[in-house]
Image (cartoon, rainbow, N blue to C red; front, side, top):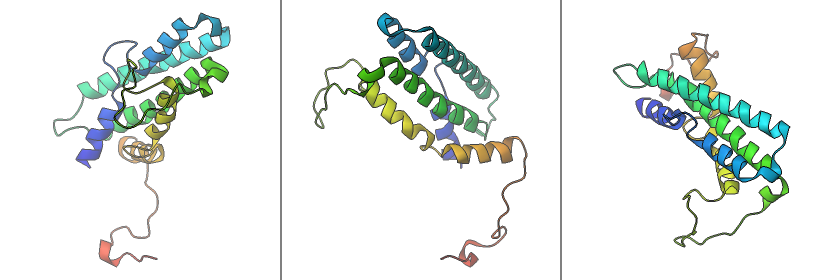
Length: 172
């Protein structure tokens, strides 16, 4: 559990600088493409920036109040929000690019140098990779259960095997 909580805290932690992280990529893409800017997309980018800032401040607060024994279930907040925010930010980037977003510059063979500044590849690859964010380190549904039960104190799901030793749980 400690390992998972550490992983979730790391996955959910955002940059410590305002405007850092994936939102900076969306802002940079926006600034580099004035030909694609519309008021609707500007509003979406503003909303994403605000969500990103709220997530950053929540992560800072969580780090500041972390228990001595390591991260607790509060790390699930950052992981859940961060994973879904990443997907929203990269979806915005793809929407900003429009039909150009489905183009993939080139594919590289394993070990071949991409020749790009960013090791993560083009924005299209980052968009596809963001889909894994809600799975790695525990699915978003698992994070919601942890938050409900351990942070909010809500009752857990009813389990017929509660209190039974593993070897006595019926399988099959």
